[in-house]
Amino acid sequence: GAVEAAYEVRITPLDGTVLLVFRDLTEAQAGASQRRDFVANVSHELKTPLTAIAGFIETLQGPARDDPAARGRFLAMMAQEVARMDRLVSDLLSLSRLEGQARRRPTDRLDLAALASEAAGLLRPGAEAEGVRIALDLPEAAPVQGDRDQLMQVLSNLIENAVKYGARPGRVTLTLQPVAREPVLRARAWRLEVADDGPGIAPEHVPRLTERFYRVDTGRSRAQGGTGLGLSIVKHIVNRHRGRLRIESAPGEGTRVSVILPAA
Ligand code: ADP
Image (cartoon, rainbow, N blue to C red; front, top):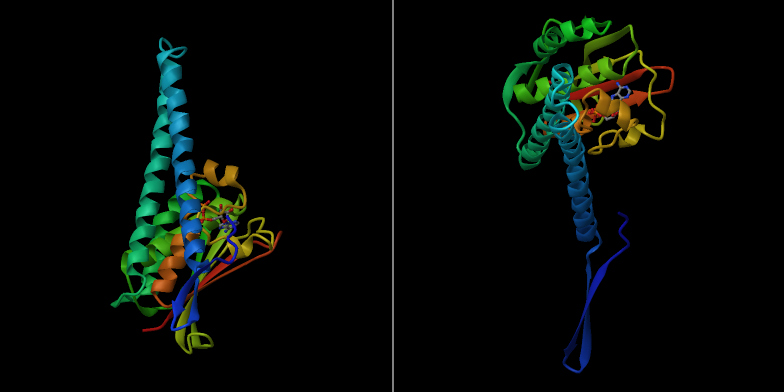
């Protein structure tokens, strides 16, 4: 919800004059309101699969009780809803862990090129089953300082999104290039790009995609098993690595997500 400016005013008599103390509470209240929105969103996201499961149980106890084929179908749908809740809870735990780690920069020396090729290898069979090719353009090595699991999560979230929301048949390109002097980081860096040839995203949505639970098309995201938290997790991980995240997209021109990480 929107928060207007909020102030606390204290009036204290002092030696025949009056002391007025103003305290700006706007930010604290905005924080509280964001937390309330977040709890409401999480509750809603958990309630959706629970309602579906409750409905399936009712059907299994009633109309589908003596129909083995229907029973199998409903159990499969219940398993799907349970898997969705499991993903949601895992994503929420990742986010909460990341918030606690925000100030601690990871220090392990890693090769981003090797991670990118590993992530692509893991996701390729699933993508190809959907008619999507994953093409790689990677250097021999790309040393960075980072957290292996978290960078793998960035790679898989971005590749999975490109496959999910890209064209059918389609092509996802993963490129990694050196940047001699990144202007904002003022240092040598690596630019990792995941690009798809999907329908793209209308400009008004692009700046909001990293907000928790923000989706362009909720039905589509849910149908694809999305939690609405993937890009928010990516943003947290990139920030923790002192990197930058950029999303470029235009309707009809596909989407390109770049992650820029300081070189080690
Ligand atoms: P989700 O679990 O819904 O995929 P994300 O946080 O990963 O959540 O992404 C948020 C939303 O951004 C998605 O629901 C989708 O609408 C949009 N999106 C993300 N990646 C792409 C892409 N490559 N092409 C088009 N839309 C995308």
